[in-house]
Image 1 (cartoon, rainbow, N blue to C red):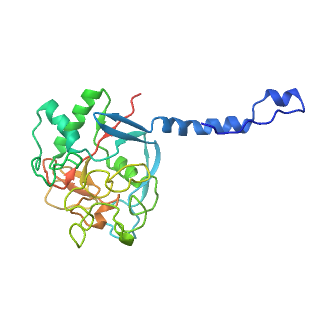
Image 2 (cartoon, one colour):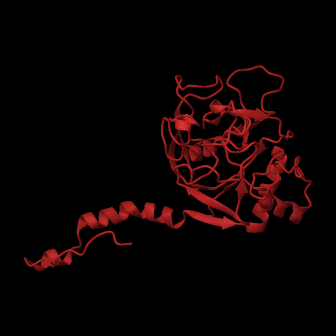
Image 3 (tube, rainbow, N blue to C red):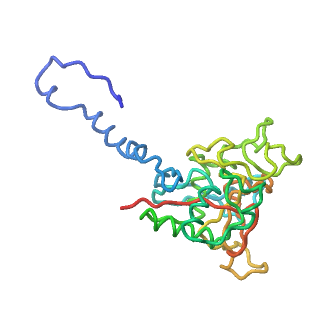
Length: 281
């Protein structure tokens, strides 16, 4: 990579020629973490491609005036995260089939449904326990730790480096200007081009190169759901978090700050997951 042009030879003393430019060394030192991140930007395991999300401070949650905001969303705040890899797409049927073949794990709901079982469509009908089992298998076969993303990891990745924007792509509505930016429920069924789940990567990626961080399928997270208000039919800590909205969700559910939840044994045709890989020391 050519970062600097060669400087002309100095002609006014040996002392100047002996010392490299201080600015050059300072810039190299400052850019070293950036070059390292680029060198580790993507990796692949078991046909799953991962993108590195750099460690640092991230804004999560939503401001009180954000359109579509739910009462159980945290106010905007900063969280500090260690570097982690996250799969570029939701786990597909083809990728999940490797897990089923290797382990004999029970097939998920809708595995035989031709509307939902295309090889490049996201796997659906998986419980939280199924998704966690997939992560354990991936950890075993690769030797590197894999797990479901935490809510903070998922939201930081979904925002794609944007701050104070309601969607992974910015402020535009999911169908603003007649351009569909995600697979979600519209007033006209099939208007997005898909009546059910879309093959992963059918819509533009966010700023981190991640696909379908809004819509297509709701994604299991590692965290237990802790409501900001008490009440409801489930005891605190029983439910697990879901993020991202889905093909049957409305626009407000596509926001990174939006939170859904379900019992860990629950499965449906709108629920899938993606995987985090932790860097090895």
